[in-house]
Length: 126
Image 1 (cartoon, rainbow, N blue to C red):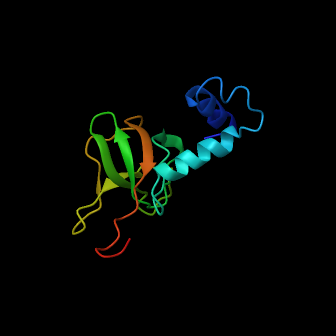
Image 2: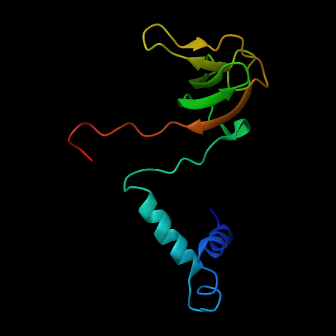
């Protein structure tokens, strides 16, 4: 979120009349303070769905939204041929015999991606 977007949010949601006439009001500080209280410490804000062109193709497991399948947890596998090889595809794994290519995948079926969230802390840790 840019400082300009934060300023607009503060102006839109602050009580009209009080903020508008107070030159010492810091919109960015106000909004950052509110946002810092809304996100528990140790949590990460996920940016949402990102353009598929920016997805990592280094074997990192990510969520990809497919036109035919919805979202799936996948990784790019180039089968030792390079990321632009005709054999490079999104793969799923069963953690036993995989990875397996996504069935029915064709170029353009992958629409967007996002990173996986962090794993939960073990019980008793926060």
